[in-house]
Amino acid sequence: GTPHGLRIEHDKSAGQSFLYHANNDATVIKTTLDGEVIWTANFSHWQSTRKELWPFKPTDAVVLPGTDLLMVADGYGSSYIHALDKYTGMYMEGRSFGGQGKNSSNPVKLNTPHGINVDPRHPGLLVISDRSNNRFVRTMANGTYVDSTPSISLPCNVDVHEDAYAGQVAIVPSLGATYSNLNNGSVAIYDQGNHLLSVIEVARLIGHLGHQHPHDAIFLPNGDFILCCWAGPSNGPEQGPAKGTISYWRRHRERSILQI
Image (cartoon, rainbow, N blue to C red):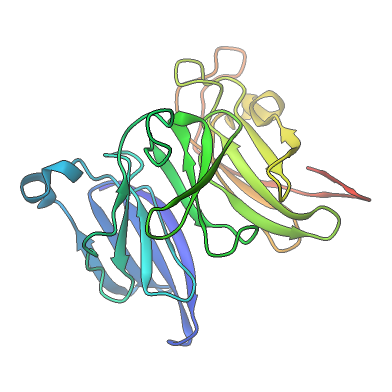
């Protein structure tokens, strides 16, 4: 299969940390940090037993704090959010929500829910990167719709950091302008109210080095961030081929403003 999303969780009750691997081959895997497999949950049988949920191509997963729920985003399959038991990998009946659709027809319908995370700015809620609908969606774990916010184009994920000057800020990588025109891959920073603070035009700045299609980004504790870019189609001869890259971006320590 194709490994895609990777999430770390520190389980206080177990006294150790674990990794959850979302694999496009209808598979979710839990391991220790040393790579020991705790469980593997493969859902290929859904092709015949749960046709309404097929295809299933997980792209991301996150544990809902204080629960045994592992929420899994089917970003490249049928656009559902599923719940697994984080201790066993068993599918939890009746907990799936979403499914492919336009947000205008039903606010909880999704179209490429590429990323899923918990949002410290809104405790208890999930934030879903509804990529093809160009928005963030916040829901409860049972799928109850809370609200949504238009975002930078083709948002891939959301990560939140407590900034000394700007408060709780979110970082969002944008794959590009549209699927037919992936130029202008960027990273956006939003404040607690989801107002845009800053845009880093990654492709314009270093696209010639292969960094063209931002695909994931995480904050570090000091406010710097790590960016992963997808090796997709080239932005053109002036930038050369797009490469699968990882880059480090340092935060400028400016008073009362966030610049990266």
